[in-house]
Image (cartoon, rainbow, N blue to C red; front, side, top):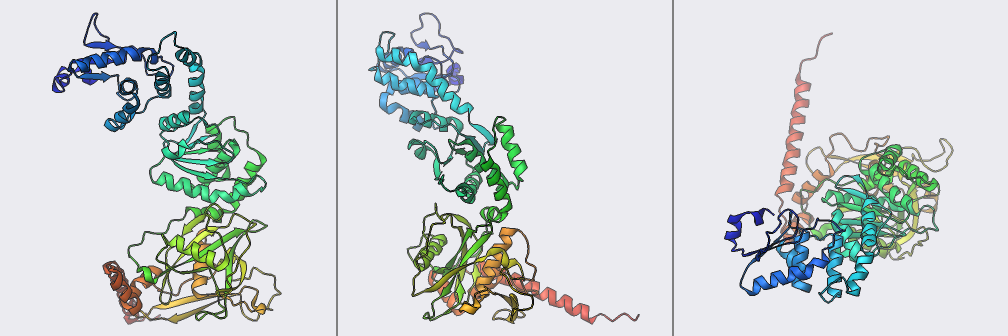
Length: 570
């Protein structure tokens, strides 16, 4: 509108004709160069009947060598609809290309389609126009009801709806009107394929035969919503069963904002005052709150790595968790084959070195678990919880990938060349010095948990502590959980249960995992050569190592100064 009212702008663009699609700029009587279509920007307006006159006005002006300014008030709905009608099939894409903000309201989009079906000549006697006119108000009302039924949980971040249009045009308009960038659907649902082209669509299929299916899917749901919101997206959560959509949203609030069950339900009640929680809704949220371990793991993001690692010296392990019958978490462990050249018979996690075809460290862990124990690589059956910070092994940098096994019907397929047997162990037991399995007091020949300190290769006074946990299967030849495997499981349990173990994890003044890796990249031949081969910049590792050495030097000076002070005579 401002451009149409500005004589200076009209002269700058050599505008000879104006087509106003709004009441705000009426044309004068008998004006040959100004046509006004006085309609509001409302889905109920009948723009269709005015399109023939508008198209003739534009065509006449262009044929005479004129330049036409088509405008409304904002230039994003009414005027683009008229321009689209003039350009016929190619115009809408042209409008969007020239003005990316363009988004026709649903009523105008439907009228453009009717305009085409009318042979571009609608009239009160045209049967197609009359059919559209008869159904239009009801159709638009149904569309607007979908928008009204969509409630905001977190403004500009998270929406919830149990109603969703199956018609592709309504789907397109709904997602565009709401500004949705990510769509999370939970079965049962009817989602048009159009939705996938307009938004990042993630579907979660819930097996109605399993009472715990939704509960077990919540970590994956929370991860998807969290990643979408952190990327600046607007997420719409939809399920035809309202309680499922509400459960997903509550679980996210509990995970990301640390809401209690009551606080999350209060947020839903404010948005949906008529929502009547079902028994399964309450049960799932209570279990999800009790099983805060999954929530914490799903929300965990490892600190950003400041160093690059040589791919040929990188490896991954899969920390595969599952929910036991009593709701507690177990981790899958394997006994390595006795024929292996290294660590034969040890208790370990599935994993191995990165292969050239692996797209990510997660792919490596999943591939190795599939090859060793037959665990599916399908993220719908085994969703990702989190990826931990890397650990240093003898000649590898190992990254733990934590997943949750949802399908309790899965059966292991062991690769006999690598794995002798498979068993499970309670995750929480890696925070305790007391055994999780039944035993008589003082009957264990060795303690359930032990730790050992030793000085490894590295800077002066680097003392490392390694841990050992019994499995309760030692009589059957299963070795204790030891060393790197124990360290990674302690870390997983610490994050999940949000508390420290009842024993000291690290030796006094021990270097961090990052500091150990940095020193190894600089000083161990196998890593140094790999870094040279891959062209890796070692300056970040050098900065980390030098900072550690300066801290150690300051600590030693402080200790010496303290020892040299004269003793007080008391």
